[in-house]
Length: 137
Image (cartoon, rainbow, N blue to C red; front, side):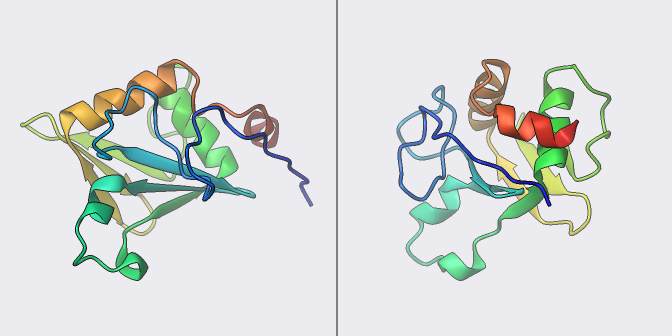
């Protein structure tokens, strides 16, 4: 069994643990991430802005901590594309990006601006957690 302890990330603005890149704008349109034990969850904050949407039907992609570390390595060029085995990103002609869970097909679509803000956070290490790096090794 792997024991983990998470430090609170300085960018975590909400007690639920969901956080976004500091490069994201204040309009709540962003890639949001939450660390929960050995699981990392990803959602699209745009979905939550529509009161007609039900929280129980909100699409969320979940990956293991090791897959998350491999995904971050792919995005920063430290790892081979597809090595994480759980996530793929497809850029659309309009610049939007569809993030897809390989196993379930669950998809989240982000605008070019949202995706660039997320990548800025990835590159600056905002989504890096030393505890997750230990699990992946």
